[in-house]
Length: 250
Length: 54
Length: 226
Image (tube, rainbow over all chains, first blue to last red; front, side, top):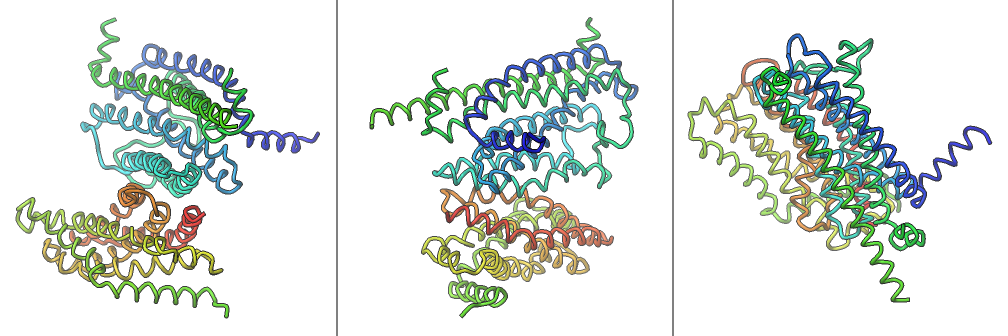
């Protein structure tokens, strides 16, 4: 088999609900295990091993939760929008399941970003909140998540709710580049990019490694929680199918 | 050790920060498992109803 | 006889306008709401006119946003209720053209009306006449963009219980950049500085939504009508 053939076969399998259900169940413990290790190292190293910042002192340690959750809030929305687009264009129900499973996780990370950012902002900028472009667009992101979840649950026909919510998430994805580029396009209170910049990051290694580890840990944690929720969402959309009987017996 | 807890005077920002993070992570795990459990129950009930009808 | 897309657009536009003018009281409702809301702020704040001027752009814009949102519900609702919407969808004319015509008609009777009334409201809020050109232009672009955004939301929420609230919940986050730049443009004009940057951005947003929103709204209708 050629490489392309193998890839396409795998892609088709992803559209199959029982396959996805099985993969999610099997993958979850691994994702969670590695996530726990990465987050554990990140927290310990970030709190105890990384040296204090020259300007911000010990307060800079909040970066270890704020930046990863911010990245995740935007990444999850993008994944949700992509899954929704796939579901709408190719009518693959699993896409709706992924989107529905991701929305509450993404919303919680957006809230975490706003809260940790607020707690960090108070000692650094003197204020818990400012209406600068990045904070505002992150807040809009939270509203978008809530809108998508509300729209999905507003319909009596779940399939229609899925499709409506999918369209809304695709329309709202225009906010994602705004969140990311807002610190580039506008001179504002919020500082610029920390990790994703052309050229090497500005931070020294001892500070950077815990941050990268937290980023990885959060991503894998999202993957693990997604696996759990995805099983439920797939079940909800496939209740009448034969494979479900075997699946829920285990 | 108390230096660690006081976080250079920023303790009342840093610790709630990490604390809220822990809460969000734990909530995610709890809520996800709850929704999976509910989905399995609903699926079981739907299957039982279908079986009793046939 | 087959009708070209442009003729279809004009036909539906005419139909919508004729239907709207048949119910003049429905036409006036968003306008009256606009006037009432803008009155609430000075009443609630009871400050001097010069201080009110600082808040005027924001008050104007929030009131315009809310008034437009209120009337968006009716964009598709009455046609959906009596089955006309399905007939239009089956007519063979692309849904995109139909949606575009309905949205433009909606803006003409709602947004444009707000823009025309805004000098009166602006004066009441203390906005100097030198800023009127910017105010009118920014409100015009903004309400048009809002009508387009709202058409997507309206298409998604037809037939949903309490759809009006959900519609606002969906549309307002998307409309926040509008508010920021629209009020910002008027702010700058009041201060005497050039509002060109903000106006260009508003125009860009307007063009973006004008070109993309009809397709999204048509897709939304297809989802609802299936």
